[in-house]
Length: 438
Image 1 (cartoon, helix red, strand yellow):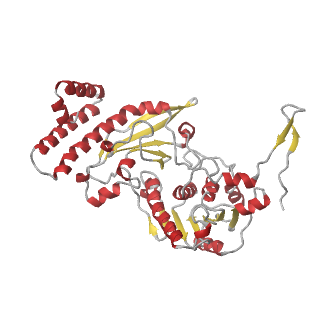
Image 2 (cartoon, rainbow, N blue to C red; image 1 turned 120 degrees about the vertical axis):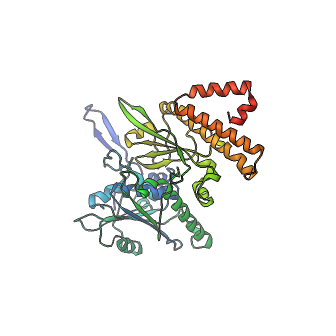
């Protein structure tokens, strides 16, 4: 049995004669507190898929097997796998590995905290080229028993046998979650409610992964294409910007420089106005475009770190959500060298826009919302009157003319002139201003 951590006095090399004390944290206490860093089920799975992408995987398979209190989740990939040192390091809290530019990892906590946020046991079964199969398990009950940061090789039970089958002799890694106390309550783990909850999480997971990894699923640009399967279903990309729709409009792209100490990092903005309901190719396409949060809450900024979506919906403090701007969506891209500036959290689900960037975004975001507002208002009379002619047609025509004027002024960089024209029309010809949508 590993001995309990002790306080050890040492003599400091920097200041001879000064006593320093090493106080190891209680493993049993700290591991339990690390379970609450902000993951839900979908974001926890997504964090493990980040590791698969970093390992060069071309296919990730998520298997959710309901069996009451013995239910399990498997996340399997065909990446490069790990040797004995690699798997032990992967299960160390605060991994010592270095992260390269563009690597989706960040703090060396993801695999552990994401896994243990859902269950009390995580097992890693992995095989690298030319290396025999490796297995290690991190179990909170075992850690509590020894109060030490310990791993062990799991016995060849059902979960391990299934994980080995998923590898099938190839390189790759399988992560197994068991003792799913955060997913299924211990007292009702076998009932119909538990099964419905398990199935509901599966459906939410599909939507989440289709959105978060949509660039990888589509193989956009020079991104290697990734397959993600949830049980027997291969996921397809959900594009927030609906670029496949003929009536989607993209405004001019913008780039910004953000200071990082004495260096400069790049941030890139693309802006889109989605079609109104009547301009979508089909009603089904319009409904699908609403996204997991539905239209109003899906509007706004979609923030990507190294092509992986980390935050979406809302305007990140630059403005308020509004029914009239629900067709406006924009992407913000930054690379991992700007992590500190964006204050990305451990779960890689939340960022904070740096104040210098918020100021630079003010004009292009305002332009986007003005045009999206007008696109919405042009469509509103048509929807209310079901296409009947008359006064509503005149309103629509006036709004379309106003939209064309605004678009021309914005795209010729005459934003100040637009504001001046709107002010003058509202003062001198309010009826005309309303008909033009100013």
